[in-house]
Image (cartoon, rainbow, N blue to C red; front, side):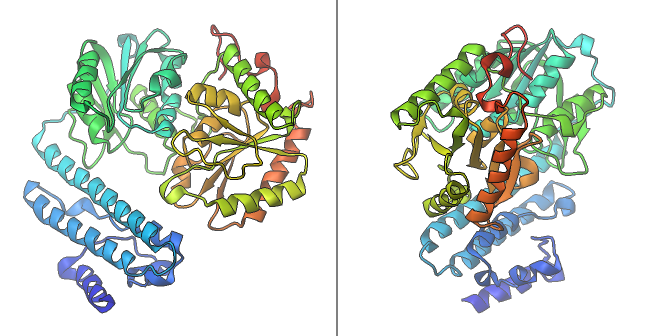
Length: 483
Protein backbone atom coordinates (compact mmCIF):
# COMPACT_ATOMS: atom_id res chain seq x y z
CA UNK A 1 0.00 0.00 0.00
CA UNK A 2 2.86 2.41 0.79
CA UNK A 3 4.20 1.81 -2.74
CA UNK A 4 0.82 2.78 -4.11
CA UNK A 5 0.86 5.95 -2.07
CA UNK A 6 4.35 6.81 -3.32
CA UNK A 7 3.11 6.33 -6.87
CA UNK A 8 0.19 8.62 -6.10
CA UNK A 9 2.57 11.26 -4.79
CA UNK A 10 4.62 11.07 -8.00
CA UNK A 11 1.47 11.45 -10.09
CA UNK A 12 0.30 14.43 -8.05
CA UNK A 13 3.63 16.17 -8.50
CA UNK A 14 4.09 15.55 -12.24
CA UNK A 15 3.75 18.48 -14.66
CA UNK A 16 0.45 17.10 -15.95
CA UNK A 17 -1.11 16.89 -12.49
CA UNK A 18 0.80 19.47 -10.52
CA UNK A 19 -0.65 19.87 -7.07
CA UNK A 20 1.62 22.38 -5.30
CA UNK A 21 0.44 20.97 -1.97
CA UNK A 22 3.46 22.07 0.04
CA UNK A 23 6.05 24.74 -0.21
CA UNK A 24 9.08 22.75 -1.17
CA UNK A 25 12.09 23.24 1.03
CA UNK A 26 15.10 20.91 1.16
CA UNK A 27 14.44 20.17 4.82
CA UNK A 28 10.97 18.90 3.95
CA UNK A 29 12.02 16.33 1.36
CA UNK A 30 11.30 13.33 3.59
CA UNK A 31 7.71 14.40 4.13
CA UNK A 32 7.20 15.18 0.47
CA UNK A 33 8.37 11.67 -0.39
CA UNK A 34 5.68 10.23 1.90
CA UNK A 35 8.27 9.35 4.52
CA UNK A 36 6.06 10.67 7.28
CA UNK A 37 6.43 7.48 9.28
CA UNK A 38 9.99 8.56 10.15
CA UNK A 39 8.89 11.95 11.51
CA UNK A 40 7.89 12.53 15.16
CA UNK A 41 4.19 12.10 15.78
CA UNK A 42 3.56 15.77 16.49
CA UNK A 43 5.25 16.79 13.24
CA UNK A 44 3.08 14.38 11.29
CA UNK A 45 0.05 16.39 12.35
CA UNK A 46 1.81 19.61 11.35
CA UNK A 47 2.23 18.12 7.86
CA UNK A 48 -1.48 17.27 7.84
CA UNK A 49 -2.36 20.90 8.49
CA UNK A 50 0.01 22.12 5.74
CA UNK A 51 -0.91 19.65 3.04
CA UNK A 52 -3.82 21.67 1.66
CA UNK A 53 -1.97 24.94 1.06
CA UNK A 54 -2.66 24.83 -2.66
CA UNK A 55 -1.65 27.38 -5.23
CA UNK A 56 -4.90 29.06 -6.30
CA UNK A 57 -3.43 31.24 -9.01
CA UNK A 58 -4.55 28.80 -11.71
CA UNK A 59 -8.28 29.41 -11.03
CA UNK A 60 -9.09 32.02 -13.67
CA UNK A 61 -12.81 31.52 -14.10
CA UNK A 62 -15.75 29.51 -12.77
CA UNK A 63 -15.16 26.67 -15.27
CA UNK A 64 -11.94 25.68 -13.51
CA UNK A 65 -13.63 25.31 -10.11
CA UNK A 66 -14.86 21.73 -10.54
CA UNK A 67 -11.43 20.26 -11.50
CA UNK A 68 -9.93 22.11 -8.56
CA UNK A 69 -12.48 20.64 -6.16
CA UNK A 70 -11.81 17.13 -7.44
CA UNK A 71 -8.08 17.65 -6.99
CA UNK A 72 -8.49 19.02 -3.47
CA UNK A 73 -10.67 16.08 -2.40
CA UNK A 74 -8.18 13.61 -3.87
CA UNK A 75 -5.21 15.18 -2.10
CA UNK A 76 -7.03 15.35 1.26
CA UNK A 77 -7.99 11.67 1.02
CA UNK A 78 -4.48 10.56 0.10
CA UNK A 79 -3.00 12.67 2.87
CA UNK A 80 -5.23 11.06 5.47
CA UNK A 81 -4.39 7.57 4.20
CA UNK A 82 -0.67 8.16 4.28
CA UNK A 83 -0.88 9.50 7.83
CA UNK A 84 -3.11 6.76 9.17
CA UNK A 85 -1.00 3.92 7.73
CA UNK A 86 2.22 5.36 9.17
CA UNK A 87 1.09 5.37 12.80
CA UNK A 88 1.99 2.34 14.83
CA UNK A 89 2.41 3.52 18.44
CA UNK A 90 -0.02 3.38 21.36
CA UNK A 91 -1.59 6.74 20.45
CA UNK A 92 -2.27 5.70 16.85
CA UNK A 93 -6.06 5.73 17.10
CA UNK A 94 -6.14 9.19 18.65
CA UNK A 95 -3.68 10.56 16.11
CA UNK A 96 -5.64 9.04 13.23
CA UNK A 97 -8.70 10.93 14.42
CA UNK A 98 -6.68 14.13 14.60
CA UNK A 99 -5.26 13.48 11.14
CA UNK A 100 -8.74 12.96 9.71
CA UNK A 101 -10.06 16.07 11.41
CA UNK A 102 -7.14 18.15 10.13
CA UNK A 103 -7.55 16.80 6.61
CA UNK A 104 -11.28 17.61 6.67
CA UNK A 105 -10.65 21.09 8.08
CA UNK A 106 -8.07 21.76 5.41
CA UNK A 107 -10.43 20.51 2.71
CA UNK A 108 -13.24 22.67 4.07
CA UNK A 109 -10.95 25.69 4.12
CA UNK A 110 -9.94 25.14 0.53
CA UNK A 111 -13.53 24.54 -0.57
CA UNK A 112 -14.45 27.89 0.95
CA UNK A 113 -11.64 29.54 -0.98
CA UNK A 114 -12.67 27.97 -4.28
CA UNK A 115 -16.39 28.69 -3.87
CA UNK A 116 -15.58 32.17 -2.66
CA UNK A 117 -13.54 32.86 -5.75
CA UNK A 118 -16.33 31.53 -7.95
CA UNK A 119 -18.76 33.95 -6.29
CA UNK A 120 -16.20 36.74 -6.63
CA UNK A 121 -16.31 36.24 -10.41
CA UNK A 122 -20.09 36.65 -10.37
CA UNK A 123 -20.59 39.48 -7.87
CA UNK A 124 -19.99 43.06 -8.89
CA UNK A 125 -17.43 44.56 -6.52
CA UNK A 126 -16.23 48.14 -6.62
CA UNK A 127 -14.34 48.79 -3.39
CA UNK A 128 -13.43 52.42 -2.83
CA UNK A 129 -9.86 53.66 -2.60
CA UNK A 130 -10.96 56.71 -0.59
CA UNK A 131 -10.36 56.66 3.17
CA UNK A 132 -13.22 56.45 5.61
CA UNK A 133 -14.38 59.76 7.02
CA UNK A 134 -14.63 59.46 10.84
CA UNK A 135 -17.22 62.24 10.89
CA UNK A 136 -19.63 59.99 8.98
CA UNK A 137 -19.35 57.00 11.34
CA UNK A 138 -21.73 56.91 14.30
CA UNK A 139 -22.42 53.17 14.51
CA UNK A 140 -20.17 50.19 13.78
CA UNK A 141 -20.89 46.47 13.42
CA UNK A 142 -18.09 43.91 13.82
CA UNK A 143 -18.94 40.48 12.35
CA UNK A 144 -16.91 37.53 13.68
CA UNK A 145 -19.20 34.49 13.94
CA UNK A 146 -16.78 32.23 15.78
CA UNK A 147 -17.59 30.30 18.96
CA UNK A 148 -14.14 30.41 20.59
CA UNK A 149 -13.17 32.54 23.57
CA UNK A 150 -9.71 33.26 22.17
CA UNK A 151 -10.97 34.50 18.80
CA UNK A 152 -13.43 36.81 20.53
CA UNK A 153 -10.65 38.25 22.70
CA UNK A 154 -8.56 38.84 19.58
CA UNK A 155 -11.18 41.41 18.52
CA UNK A 156 -10.53 43.63 21.53
CA UNK A 157 -7.64 45.62 19.96
CA UNK A 158 -9.95 46.47 17.05
CA UNK A 159 -12.67 47.56 19.49
CA UNK A 160 -10.16 49.71 21.33
CA UNK A 161 -8.96 51.43 18.15
CA UNK A 162 -12.53 52.09 17.01
CA UNK A 163 -13.35 53.60 20.40
CA UNK A 164 -10.21 55.77 20.34
CA UNK A 165 -10.73 57.13 16.83
CA UNK A 166 -14.55 57.22 17.00
CA UNK A 167 -15.28 57.91 20.69
CA UNK A 168 -18.94 58.70 20.04
CA UNK A 169 -19.63 55.65 17.87
CA UNK A 170 -21.79 52.80 19.15
CA UNK A 171 -20.15 49.40 18.55
CA UNK A 172 -22.12 46.19 18.06
CA UNK A 173 -20.40 42.80 17.88
CA UNK A 174 -21.94 39.83 16.07
CA UNK A 175 -20.35 36.60 17.31
CA UNK A 176 -21.07 32.93 18.00
CA UNK A 177 -19.19 32.72 21.32
CA UNK A 178 -21.95 31.90 23.86
CA UNK A 179 -20.47 33.99 26.70
CA UNK A 180 -19.52 36.98 24.55
CA UNK A 181 -22.10 39.21 26.22
CA UNK A 182 -20.48 38.61 29.60
CA UNK A 183 -16.98 39.00 28.20
CA UNK A 184 -17.60 42.33 26.46
CA UNK A 185 -20.34 43.80 28.63
CA UNK A 186 -18.21 46.54 30.25
CA UNK A 187 -15.81 47.24 27.38
CA UNK A 188 -15.99 50.96 26.48
CA UNK A 189 -17.88 51.69 23.28
CA UNK A 190 -19.83 48.42 23.19
CA UNK A 191 -23.58 48.94 22.76
CA UNK A 192 -24.76 45.37 22.31
CA UNK A 193 -23.44 41.87 21.59
CA UNK A 194 -25.46 39.80 19.12
CA UNK A 195 -24.86 36.10 19.73
CA UNK A 196 -25.56 33.67 16.91
CA UNK A 197 -26.13 29.98 17.76
CA UNK A 198 -23.39 27.41 17.48
CA UNK A 199 -24.20 23.67 17.45
CA UNK A 200 -27.24 24.06 19.68
CA UNK A 201 -30.87 23.04 19.72
CA UNK A 202 -33.23 25.20 17.65
CA UNK A 203 -30.21 26.63 15.86
CA UNK A 204 -32.18 27.78 12.81
CA UNK A 205 -34.76 29.61 14.91
CA UNK A 206 -32.11 31.22 17.11
CA UNK A 207 -30.12 32.23 14.04
CA UNK A 208 -33.15 33.99 12.60
CA UNK A 209 -33.75 35.77 15.92
CA UNK A 210 -30.12 36.98 16.01
CA UNK A 211 -30.31 38.03 12.35
CA UNK A 212 -33.48 40.00 13.00
CA UNK A 213 -31.82 41.69 15.96
CA UNK A 214 -28.85 42.65 13.79
CA UNK A 215 -30.99 43.95 10.94
CA UNK A 216 -33.07 46.03 13.33
CA UNK A 217 -30.15 48.47 13.42
CA UNK A 218 -28.84 50.69 10.65
CA UNK A 219 -25.08 50.94 10.69
CA UNK A 220 -22.70 53.41 9.15
CA UNK A 221 -19.91 50.80 8.97
CA UNK A 222 -19.83 46.98 9.03
CA UNK A 223 -16.44 45.27 9.40
CA UNK A 224 -15.37 41.75 8.44
CA UNK A 225 -12.10 41.53 10.42
CA UNK A 226 -10.90 38.17 9.06
CA UNK A 227 -9.62 37.31 5.57
CA UNK A 228 -11.52 34.05 5.00
CA UNK A 229 -14.61 33.67 7.20
CA UNK A 230 -17.70 32.68 5.19
CA UNK A 231 -20.07 33.25 8.12
CA UNK A 232 -18.73 36.77 8.64
CA UNK A 233 -19.18 37.50 4.93
CA UNK A 234 -22.78 36.34 5.05
CA UNK A 235 -23.45 38.50 8.10
CA UNK A 236 -21.83 41.62 6.68
CA UNK A 237 -23.78 41.13 3.43
CA UNK A 238 -27.10 40.85 5.28
CA UNK A 239 -26.39 43.82 7.54
CA UNK A 240 -28.13 47.13 6.83
CA UNK A 241 -25.07 49.32 6.52
CA UNK A 242 -23.77 52.27 4.54
CA UNK A 243 -20.15 51.09 4.27
CA UNK A 244 -18.62 47.61 4.27
CA UNK A 245 -14.96 47.11 5.19
CA UNK A 246 -12.92 43.93 4.72
CA UNK A 247 -9.83 42.38 3.24
CA UNK A 248 -9.51 42.09 -0.54
CA UNK A 249 -8.52 38.42 -0.81
CA UNK A 250 -8.63 35.71 -3.45
CA UNK A 251 -12.02 34.49 -2.21
CA UNK A 252 -13.59 37.80 -1.12
CA UNK A 253 -17.05 37.95 -2.72
CA UNK A 254 -18.73 40.57 -0.52
CA UNK A 255 -19.47 43.86 -2.32
CA UNK A 256 -17.14 45.88 -0.11
CA UNK A 257 -17.22 49.66 -0.26
CA UNK A 258 -13.73 49.77 1.30
CA UNK A 259 -11.35 46.90 0.51
CA UNK A 260 -7.89 46.63 2.08
CA UNK A 261 -5.15 44.39 0.74
CA UNK A 262 -3.75 41.78 3.09
CA UNK A 263 -0.41 42.80 4.63
CA UNK A 264 2.62 41.26 2.98
CA UNK A 265 4.11 40.17 6.30
CA UNK A 266 2.56 37.73 8.74
CA UNK A 267 0.56 39.42 11.50
CA UNK A 268 -0.83 38.37 14.84
CA UNK A 269 -4.55 37.65 14.64
CA UNK A 270 -5.19 40.44 17.14
CA UNK A 271 -3.16 42.96 15.13
CA UNK A 272 -4.66 42.26 11.71
CA UNK A 273 -8.21 43.59 12.44
CA UNK A 274 -6.72 46.78 13.91
CA UNK A 275 -4.51 47.04 10.82
CA UNK A 276 -7.61 46.76 8.61
CA UNK A 277 -9.38 49.59 10.42
CA UNK A 278 -6.34 51.88 10.50
CA UNK A 279 -5.68 51.31 6.80
CA UNK A 280 -9.27 52.30 6.01
CA UNK A 281 -8.79 55.54 7.98
CA UNK A 282 -5.30 56.06 6.51
CA UNK A 283 -3.75 56.36 9.96
CA UNK A 284 -0.52 54.64 11.04
CA UNK A 285 -0.56 51.61 13.33
CA UNK A 286 2.30 50.61 15.63
CA UNK A 287 1.89 46.82 15.47
CA UNK A 288 4.32 46.28 18.35
CA UNK A 289 2.12 48.32 20.69
CA UNK A 290 -1.11 46.37 20.09
CA UNK A 291 -2.36 44.52 23.17
CA UNK A 292 -5.44 42.54 24.12
CA UNK A 293 -7.89 44.81 25.92
CA UNK A 294 -10.27 43.59 28.59
CA UNK A 295 -10.91 46.36 31.16
CA UNK A 296 -11.97 44.91 34.49
CA UNK A 297 -13.96 46.81 37.08
CA UNK A 298 -12.87 47.30 40.67
CA UNK A 299 -15.42 44.90 42.12
CA UNK A 300 -14.41 42.20 39.60
CA UNK A 301 -10.76 42.43 40.63
CA UNK A 302 -11.71 42.23 44.29
CA UNK A 303 -13.94 39.21 43.61
CA UNK A 304 -11.12 37.49 41.71
CA UNK A 305 -8.65 38.04 44.55
CA UNK A 306 -11.25 36.78 47.03
CA UNK A 307 -11.87 33.60 45.00
CA UNK A 308 -8.13 32.85 44.87
CA UNK A 309 -7.72 33.58 48.60
CA UNK A 310 -10.57 31.20 49.47
CA UNK A 311 -9.05 28.39 47.42
CA UNK A 312 -5.65 28.94 49.03
CA UNK A 313 -7.23 28.97 52.48
CA UNK A 314 -8.97 25.66 51.76
CA UNK A 315 -5.63 24.20 50.69
CA UNK A 316 -3.88 25.45 53.83
CA UNK A 317 -1.90 28.16 52.04
CA UNK A 318 -3.69 31.28 53.25
CA UNK A 319 -1.86 34.59 52.89
CA UNK A 320 0.39 33.29 50.11
CA UNK A 321 -0.98 35.17 47.09
CA UNK A 322 2.48 36.36 46.04
CA UNK A 323 3.54 32.74 45.58
CA UNK A 324 0.66 31.59 43.35
CA UNK A 325 1.56 30.26 39.89
CA UNK A 326 -1.66 29.75 37.93
CA UNK A 327 -1.97 27.21 35.13
CA UNK A 328 -4.54 25.77 32.75
CA UNK A 329 -3.96 22.27 31.37
CA UNK A 330 -7.25 21.30 29.69
CA UNK A 331 -6.45 21.91 26.05
CA UNK A 332 -7.97 19.81 23.28
CA UNK A 333 -6.90 18.28 19.97
CA UNK A 334 -3.34 18.85 18.82
CA UNK A 335 -2.86 21.43 21.61
CA UNK A 336 -3.19 18.76 24.32
CA UNK A 337 -0.25 18.38 26.69
CA UNK A 338 -0.41 15.14 28.66
CA UNK A 339 -0.52 15.03 32.44
CA UNK A 340 2.87 13.36 32.71
CA UNK A 341 4.44 16.43 31.11
CA UNK A 342 2.68 18.72 33.58
CA UNK A 343 3.77 16.64 36.55
CA UNK A 344 7.38 16.70 35.33
CA UNK A 345 7.17 20.48 34.81
CA UNK A 346 5.90 21.11 38.33
CA UNK A 347 8.45 18.73 39.85
CA UNK A 348 11.24 20.70 38.14
CA UNK A 349 9.80 24.14 38.92
CA UNK A 350 9.15 23.41 42.60
CA UNK A 351 12.67 22.07 42.93
CA UNK A 352 13.82 25.55 41.85
CA UNK A 353 11.14 27.42 43.81
CA UNK A 354 9.86 25.28 46.72
CA UNK A 355 7.55 28.01 48.05
CA UNK A 356 5.61 28.35 44.80
CA UNK A 357 1.95 27.30 44.92
CA UNK A 358 0.53 25.81 41.69
CA UNK A 359 -3.11 26.83 41.26
CA UNK A 360 -4.97 24.97 38.53
CA UNK A 361 -7.76 26.73 36.65
CA UNK A 362 -10.23 24.08 35.53
CA UNK A 363 -12.31 23.84 32.40
CA UNK A 364 -16.01 23.29 32.94
CA UNK A 365 -16.05 20.76 30.08
CA UNK A 366 -13.12 18.72 31.41
CA UNK A 367 -12.61 19.28 35.11
CA UNK A 368 -10.08 16.55 35.95
CA UNK A 369 -7.08 17.89 37.87
CA UNK A 370 -3.45 17.34 36.86
CA UNK A 371 -2.54 16.66 40.49
CA UNK A 372 -5.21 16.41 43.23
CA UNK A 373 -2.71 17.83 45.73
CA UNK A 374 -2.78 21.21 43.98
CA UNK A 375 -5.53 23.74 44.79
CA UNK A 376 -7.96 24.11 41.90
CA UNK A 377 -10.40 26.79 40.83
CA UNK A 378 -13.36 26.46 38.47
CA UNK A 379 -15.06 29.68 37.27
CA UNK A 380 -17.80 29.92 34.67
CA UNK A 381 -17.71 33.60 33.76
CA UNK A 382 -14.81 34.60 31.44
CA UNK A 383 -14.50 38.00 33.12
CA UNK A 384 -14.34 36.37 36.57
CA UNK A 385 -11.80 33.93 35.14
CA UNK A 386 -9.63 36.85 34.01
CA UNK A 387 -10.01 38.58 37.38
CA UNK A 388 -8.84 35.45 39.19
CA UNK A 389 -5.84 35.16 36.85
CA UNK A 390 -5.02 38.79 37.66
CA UNK A 391 -4.64 37.75 41.32
CA UNK A 392 -1.78 35.34 40.54
CA UNK A 393 1.92 36.01 40.09
CA UNK A 394 2.34 34.13 36.79
CA UNK A 395 0.19 32.08 34.49
CA UNK A 396 1.06 29.25 32.10
CA UNK A 397 -1.24 27.50 29.62
CA UNK A 398 -1.31 25.94 26.14
CA UNK A 399 -2.53 28.01 23.19
CA UNK A 400 -6.12 28.31 24.45
CA UNK A 401 -8.68 30.93 25.45
CA UNK A 402 -7.39 31.12 29.06
CA UNK A 403 -3.91 31.93 27.72
CA UNK A 404 -5.37 34.93 25.87
CA UNK A 405 -7.36 35.90 28.95
CA UNK A 406 -4.13 35.92 30.96
CA UNK A 407 -2.40 37.98 28.27
CA UNK A 408 -5.16 40.60 28.60
CA UNK A 409 -4.17 41.11 32.27
CA UNK A 410 -0.92 42.47 33.67
CA UNK A 411 0.20 39.00 34.80
CA UNK A 412 3.21 37.53 32.91
CA UNK A 413 1.84 34.80 30.65
CA UNK A 414 3.67 31.76 29.28
CA UNK A 415 2.07 30.20 26.20
CA UNK A 416 2.87 26.58 25.36
CA UNK A 417 2.68 25.77 21.64
CA UNK A 418 2.84 22.48 19.76
CA UNK A 419 1.46 22.91 16.25
CA UNK A 420 -0.21 26.33 16.25
CA UNK A 421 1.21 29.29 14.35
CA UNK A 422 3.07 31.20 17.05
CA UNK A 423 3.25 34.39 14.98
CA UNK A 424 -0.56 34.52 14.90
CA UNK A 425 -1.51 33.38 18.39
CA UNK A 426 1.33 34.09 20.85
CA UNK A 427 0.65 36.08 24.05
CA UNK A 428 1.28 39.74 23.38
CA UNK A 429 2.71 41.59 26.39
CA UNK A 430 6.45 42.41 26.42
CA UNK A 431 7.05 40.19 29.46
CA UNK A 432 4.98 37.30 28.08
CA UNK A 433 6.74 34.23 26.76
CA UNK A 434 6.00 31.78 23.95
CA UNK A 435 7.60 28.32 24.19
CA UNK A 436 7.51 25.42 21.74
CA UNK A 437 7.05 22.27 23.82
CA UNK A 438 8.25 20.10 20.95
CA UNK A 439 11.69 21.71 21.14
CA UNK A 440 12.03 22.15 24.91
CA UNK A 441 11.84 19.64 27.74
CA UNK A 442 9.60 20.22 30.74
CA UNK A 443 12.63 20.88 32.97
CA UNK A 444 14.05 23.41 30.48
CA UNK A 445 10.72 25.25 30.35
CA UNK A 446 10.60 25.23 34.16
CA UNK A 447 13.99 26.95 34.23
CA UNK A 448 12.83 29.67 31.83
CA UNK A 449 9.67 30.22 33.88
CA UNK A 450 11.75 30.45 37.03
CA UNK A 451 13.79 33.31 35.59
CA UNK A 452 10.58 35.27 34.93
CA UNK A 453 9.35 34.38 38.42
CA UNK A 454 12.50 35.87 39.94
CA UNK A 455 12.28 38.97 37.77
CA UNK A 456 8.81 39.62 39.19
CA UNK A 457 10.34 39.94 42.65
CA UNK A 458 12.80 42.61 41.54
CA UNK A 459 10.69 44.57 39.02
CA UNK A 460 8.15 46.63 41.01
CA UNK A 461 9.59 49.20 43.39
CA UNK A 462 6.87 48.45 45.93
CA UNK A 463 7.89 44.83 46.06
CA UNK A 464 4.50 43.73 44.74
CA UNK A 465 4.07 41.86 41.50
CA UNK A 466 1.42 43.05 39.01
CA UNK A 467 -1.04 40.28 39.73
CA UNK A 468 -1.08 40.97 43.47
CA UNK A 469 -1.28 44.76 43.23
CA UNK A 470 -4.21 46.56 44.72
CA UNK A 471 -7.36 46.94 42.68
CA UNK A 472 -6.82 50.69 42.45
CA UNK A 473 -3.42 50.16 40.85
CA UNK A 474 -4.64 47.50 38.45
CA UNK A 475 -7.48 49.46 36.97
CA UNK A 476 -9.48 52.62 37.19
CA UNK A 477 -13.10 53.27 37.88
CA UNK A 478 -15.65 52.65 35.07
CA UNK A 479 -15.26 56.25 33.88
CA UNK A 480 -11.57 55.65 33.11
CA UNK A 481 -10.75 52.03 32.38
CA UNK A 482 -7.45 50.19 32.44
CA UNK A 483 -5.64 50.05 29.09
